Amino acid sequence: MKITSFLARRGWLVAGVASLLVGCGGSTQEDSTLTLASRVDGRVQPASVDQGVPHVKSRDAVTVPVPSRIRLGALAQEKAAPLGSGVGPRLVGLARDVNATGAATQTLQQFQWKATEAGGQVAAISFSAEGAHGLRLGVVAKLLPGGSMLRVYSQAAPGTVFQISGQEVLQRIQRQMQAGDSGLDGQTWWTPDLGSDEVTLEVELPAGTPASALDLAIPRVSQIFENLSLLAQDEFSTKINESAVCQLDATCYDAYANQRNAVARMIFTSGANTYLCTGTLLNDSISSGTPYFLTANHCISSAAAAESLQTDWFYRTPACNSRTLSTTVARRLGGATLLFASDSFDMSLLKLNEAPPAGAFFAGWDANAQGVGAVVMGLHHPRGDMLKISFGNLRGQTFCTAPSAGTVFQCGGSTGNYHQVGWSRGTTEGGSSGSALFNGANQVIGTLYGGSSSCSATASPEFYGRFDVAYNAALKNWLSPAVSVVPSSGRSAVYRFYNGLTGAHFFTTSAAERDNTIQNAPSFAYEGIAFYAQGGPQPTNIPVYRFYGTVGGAHFYTSSAQERDSVLNNLPAFRYEGVAWYASPNVISGVSPVYRFYRPSKQVHFYTIGLAERDFIIANNPEYVYEGVGYYAWTSQ
Image 1 (cartoon, helix red, strand yellow):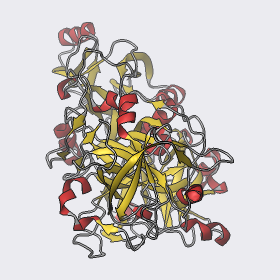
Image 2: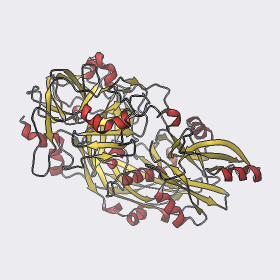
Image 3: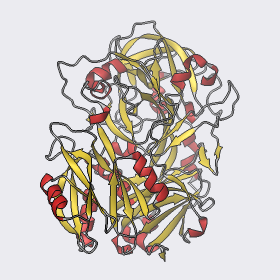
Image 4: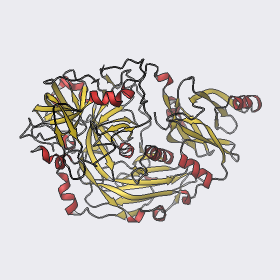
């Protein structure tokens, strides 16, 4: 196939994307005293790493509310028919408008509320589309009360739900909008794909919260028209063996066993369309365990698309050429934070919001220039198929331009930001986009941009964005952090709970305390990560002190040493428990204010980093007295 047909084959998401996006994850100023690593070896994710609290829960199906039903009908055949062809970021789901829930007032009319045992209320809406292999709901949430919970499940399996707190949904949307995604995509949280033609969204409100407090709409869904592998009733309905016949099963090549475990199949949504690509987990120079994830800019170039990411790990055969799916496959639904994206070398760096599964491999990389003729290898998911491997050589360097309106993909010249690769065995297809290129030392040196190779023309050129160029331009800020950045002084997650009996919130940075509370204190509903604070003292931060109220059973937190001493001297019912975490007293780069409220009727305080949640409480909960900014923390790690 000729290279001029690349645009049709690779299916670009958008044209003319911004050339550079830098998030809060690293400085753009280089410390001249710092010696940057030029090569880094890989590391294995140990089983001891905290995997967080899973969003997928089991529950008693008797508690499921009767939903209102919205039926969308079948996808028009003339729209669905040609979309399974094409390659690149593989299109697997189409946007569909939903008029019945297009606005918050319409959505509220669909809910049929019933009382819960805890004194709150719950309601649900079921969406279905004939012939769909999955549905992702685009939830536009502007107001979700504290203590509210959202659940996603199918009516066929209501005992297994994806559960997320309202505050976590608002935080994800806030991160997207703070990154500049101010349009409809930036205002949307996408539910996970459950692999069903029907999906139900359930909303539970805590006691004392009226339904009118909600501002939530579902104006769009993304209808999945390809049969992806999704966990349903503990079995995988597999999308396998669909790639071209010359693709090589990666399981057959044990010399690359570690590198296989670094690669994940990506499913993400942008503009309400859903796509497949490939990405690779990267190590950093201090082996911090931070889940940096590398892919192509033409796959993910916005914060909203990154937050919608689902990753499938160990998505391959259990034995060489067995043509069946391994039972070790693991899915992560938590999305990612976009750190950097550039179309200059078609590369994006993300940080996964959830820890990769135990056994995943943080791939090493080489930021040095690579020689012509060097042996290279690629690991990828063509057409979303199980993991494949390709072998070839570097033919040199070249310059490529991203397609814009009225133009096609073009590469040419003997110098530039891209590697030119010729395959000797295997090839790439749609869905392979963003996959890493490895050198002979099994270190990452590039990410797949595009090309024209096929089974009938394996020697036709493929083009990979050069890792060394991207590293020197920006990636070094995350992958080679300053030596002073150590885990003890890095950012820690502050976990948040809501006590339905007392109406108070509880916060902790301890994963052990988090898990003990979940297991042994059923009145505490886990609401996810409230914000990120620092785990150790720094010259520019201050401690946040923690007390326990032995009478009311609620905790109190303050960053004021004067207030701490006043409580110690005058309120003996409050037991001092020490420093909870560290925060910034001032506005510095990357921080957000943590707002503080006092509820006199319960004699408890509440803290939130969410601007939307702050405004909701001020407008709808007069029993909470707003006390201003307590200190400053971070919305991401």
